[in-house]
Structure formats: structure tokens, C-alpha cells
Length: 247
View 1 (tube, rainbow, N blue to C red):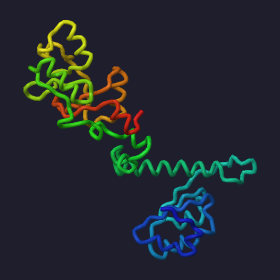
View 2 (view 1 turned 180 degrees about the vertical axis):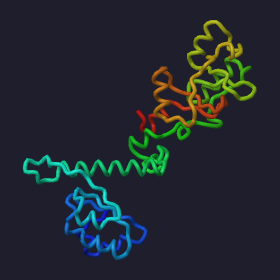
View 3 (view 1 turned 120 degrees about the vertical axis):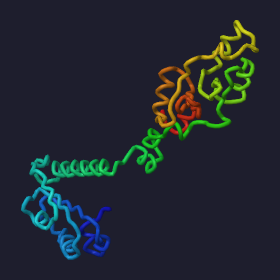
């Protein structure tokens, strides 16, 4: 949490308690407003990390760990207004944040939990979060007829049906396009297995929704079957992906 040194001197020092670590930033290391914080840390044995360009400054000498920054000339033409120095401090802050992230093994899944809204959250949505499962999946057996496959497609919203083998594995897929092509030469009572696509596009449930959308765009299709070890567990439509803000 952030603590302004002036506010600390007027009652907010109490937020610093045993077990805390204070990270104090002062370019010169002689900032008078820090005096009460330095005394408080010394009095109660609170660990202090000082970030300063003053190697022998008061802040550096009072710190349990001094992170000494390089002396640089400010971009200000008078070498007065904090410009280059604040940039260096910001870079160090980013480096510390990334180091903490790696140390805690903070993953994209953790980020998604803490940032569920907006484009950043949408980029981390996984197929498992948006796919249709159970009775919503259009599927027929390998020995089903074209008529049965067409009825299954009609009652579901995907414009395609999975064709499953006797073990529940994905043997193929039968789409609206396959139906139109089959009607030119076959009866609707013919087995669908003779007219299905043998290698339908699939995606894993752990894949990101952005990855699923990329596969659909690349292959100019509107849906993907979701499989786990060749077993059909779901289906995802391009509208499902767009609905959560992935574009």
C-alpha cells in the first residue's frame, strides 16, 4: 500500500506494523519528510529498504537494505525538475514487480481471476469457460443416416454435428455444406459416415479463446469441437468467442 510521508506524520504511521517492509524512495536520501518514518521503523524494528541515489545519505544509512540508483542528469534544462530520476525509479519499480510476479509464480489464470473485465480479461478467457457441453452438443452415431444427422443439426444451433464412433471418439463431422453436397448424389437414408468430413477442426478446453478464434478465422469456419484425448467434450461457436469480448 502507498503511504505519503506528510500524511504519515499526521496520524497514518499506524498503518506500518510489525511484519511489514517499508520501501522508501528519495532521490537525494535526505528528504526531511521521511524522518518520522525512519524513526518509526527503527523504534519498532520494521525492515526498511531505501531506494536512493545518495549512497551515503541518511536514508541509505538507516536502511536494512539500500538500493542505490545511478546518479543521472535530469532532462530538465536546469537539471532541477525530476525527469530522468523519476524514470529510473519507475524502471526499478517495474523490475521489482516482475521479480515478485515470477517468485510467486503468478500465471495468466491468476491474472484472469483478478482482472475479469475488459479486453485484458477477455484475452485470458479459455475455451472451457465458453463452450457448450452435454445435451447442447450436436452429435450422432457413426451408423446414423443423413436424415438423422440433418435433424440433429436442425435442433441445435451450430450448423454442424459431430459423428462419434462406438467409443465416443470423434470420427468425423457433418456440416450444412456436407449436406448440400451429399444431396446431389445420395439419398437422405444413406449412412452419414460416407459423406462426413473425416478430419474436423478441434481445440482443447485449456486453449485460450483467442487461439480458438484464430483457428476459426484461418480456416474460415464458425465452430470448433472440443476434445480431451480424442473424446468429444464440447463445442464452441465463433459467436461464443465474440460474446465475451474477444475480437
